[in-house]
Image 1: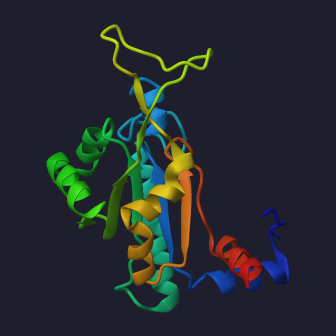
Image 2 (image 1 turned 90 degrees about the horizontal axis):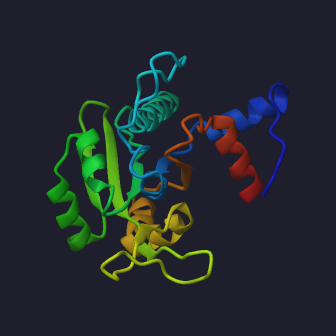
Length: 212
């Protein structure tokens, strides 16, 4: 739905108060665009040092910093410093090595956990974040003539499905059930290549108000 979010005033203050205590998982897709860009725009790709605020940071670092800030705000609002707002990362088999390298975790452990549980969970001690990794499916690349594109050896060219499969894979992987058990009512999703996408207390408040 589309609603107008006031920038100041009493209504904004009410929305901010309403959303300040709401947990919200931070989610990002890190597979489709990485592959379609030939691997150039991957999770570890860094912005130029000349860019204000985000200069020198990677896509992954920006997403985790925003999740960390949101978690700190929630803890302060509730006065409960043990609360966690999880981070969800949807990748693909083609991009998991890059994601693992940026996070400093084992690629083999990710693969094994995906096969056994449907997702991989670990605790980032540096940032104090619980991070979940799950997979998106692959699909054949289709040409302008509607035919499946083939390599020289006559095998199909496969690519990740992209962010449109995010909700479906949340359910298939078991992540939705995991978040429900953790009493996380909202998921804020943005693509890896949208570093400015963030969520505020007022933003969560307006969603809650409209749902109720």
